[in-house]
Length: 276
Image (cartoon, rainbow, N blue to C red; front, side, top):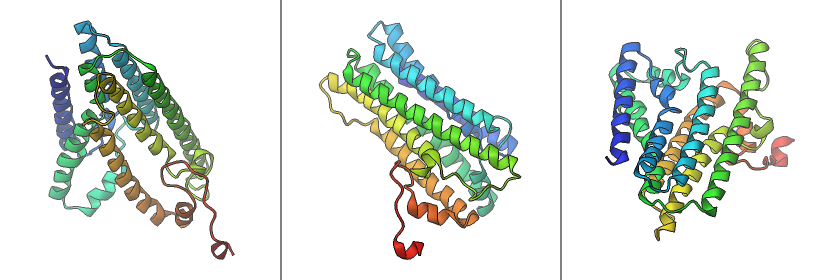
C-alpha cells in the first residue's frame, strides 16, 4: 500500500473524531490536542514504509526523529498550560461570540477541523517525497536537520520565557506591567515562538527537497504548499491575536511599533518626536 493512503485514512479518522467530540462537548480545541501528535504518526508511517520495503530509510528516520522531538516538546508545553484538561483556545470563544451558532458550526467544521486536519497532513508530505526518492543521506540533509534542531531549541527557549512570565504574572495577582512579555527573545520578536515553529517546517520541507534534488529534481516541489499554508495560517492568527492584545493593553501598540512581529530583529528606535 502507498503510505500516503494510510496517512489519509488516519487523518480522516482524526478529523471525524475532532468534529464529533466538538459537537458532543460543545468546545472546539480537540484539533489543538491532536496538533502535536498526528504529524508524528504520519511521518513514522512514511519511515516505516521505507524500512519495510528495505530501501535506504536513513533520511526518513532522521525526519521522523526530528518531528517526534517537535511533537514531544509541543505536547509538553500544551499540557502544562492545561490544554488536555478541557481548556479551550480563548480565540475560539471570542469568535463564537461574534457569530450565530450555525455560522460558528460551519466555521468549526470547515476551518477548525477540516482545514487544519488537511494542513497537518500537508506539512508532513516532504516525507512522502523522501519515500519516493530514497537517495542516500548527504551533507545538505545534515545542514537542514541541524537547522531544524536550532529552531526547535529557539522555540523551547521562547516558550519557557513566556511560561515563566505568565507564572510570575499569576503570582502577582494577574497583573504584571506592562501586561505582556518584552524581554529575552521577545525583545527581538513579538512572537519568537511562532517564528521558530514555522521555521522548523520550512527546514523539514528542505530535507524532503534534498531527496528530490539528489534524484535530479528541483529544490521547489509541490509539498512546499504545507509550509506555505502554515505560514499563512500563523500570520493570520498572529494578526487576530494582536488585535486582542492591543485592545487589552494600552502599551501594546508601542511594542508593535518598536519590535518585529515574527522574525527576530534588533528593536527599532522610535523617532525623537515620539519619545520627547
